Amino acid sequence: MAGRTRSAATIAIRATKNTTSPTLSTSVSGSGGSGGAMARTLARSQPRRRLTWPEAAPPVGLHLGVALGLMRAARRSRQIGARALQIFSDNPTAWRRRPEPPPNAPEFIAYCAREGIETIAIHASYLINLAGSSEPFASQSRAGLTYEMERAPAYGASLVNTHIGSHRGVGADVGLRRIVESVRSVLEASPVSVRLVLENSAGGGDQLGSRIEELAAILDGVGGVAGSDRLAFCLDTAHLWGAGYDISSEEGAVAVVDRFDALIGLDRLALIHLNDSRSALASRMDRHEHVGAGQIGPVGLGALLRDARLAQTTFVMETPGADEGWDAVNLRRAYLLWSGAPELPTLPPKAFHTNRRSTRMGPPPAR
Ligand SMILES: [Zn+2]
Ligand SMILES: [Zn+2]
Image (cartoon, rainbow, N blue to C red; front, side):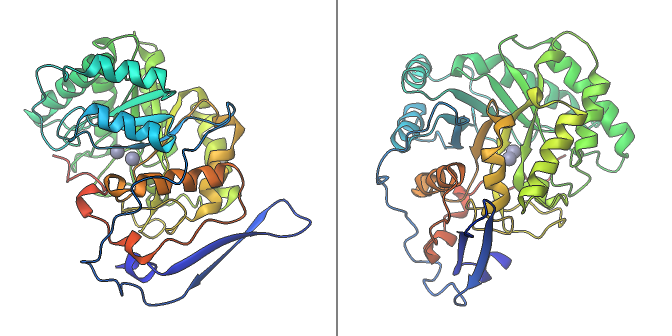
């Protein structure tokens, strides 16, 4: 419900004269929700103009649905000016995987290469739990993730992002050992062109990997086995926030990057999921919000986008209503933050009544 009360909030960053650090002011101008849940929630379908990013900018894009086809997601990415694209290879809440990639996958790969969509990432099934030990789910998790890795080149994907999983009450130590075994077996059995990307969690429900120290422990445990150079990580900003990392300020955001660099090394930070959050700091909750319009706000997210150390990291937004036109809106907001714009446009109330199904929320409970 916290999201409702913020639905009419106006957020502006005002650059104070004679200083380079912007200050943030937030004012709530109404109770929100007056448009009603039945109001049209579509953003304008055509972006005002396609964004063009300078060479120095990191690749930024969105997770887009492929229910209407791979080419639709690729063309939409090009239309709005995205330079990265994350997709599901199949239903994210099922084990079953299509036996063959879609027949137009080669066309998709060629199109993305030609149109400057530099990074294609696959988000693996939400059912995967690398920490689980109960069968048949433990074997299914390894086999399922290996399959996503094997299939990735057919989609032109260089990254396969997966949730780490939950120890389900057996304890973090046992869970971490299971994760290390699972990661080793997946790396050993997967193509050399694909990086395995482990996504940090918000820490709810016995989830592992909510602390950077835990991610580092997984890396240490995996050691120097074949393929270990392809092990990488994703920091989801909404998950960081839920786990208690206060990245709402520039100092807080930079501190997280510093910590990751010290314990793991930024060459292994392959992805940032650039999501704002509807949930409270340290709530262990995972509810995504439009960039700069949630509890994290624009300052910390902008600091990550502008951090020159992350120029090789791909930024993917998993923000609400991506299939309803809000993809273009969020990409533009990220562009504004990257370019240091002094303020973000206020979102209309309808922006907070998007189709829940097109909001990338947290996964269902892991087995
Ligand atoms: Zn995820
Ligand atoms: Zn994510």
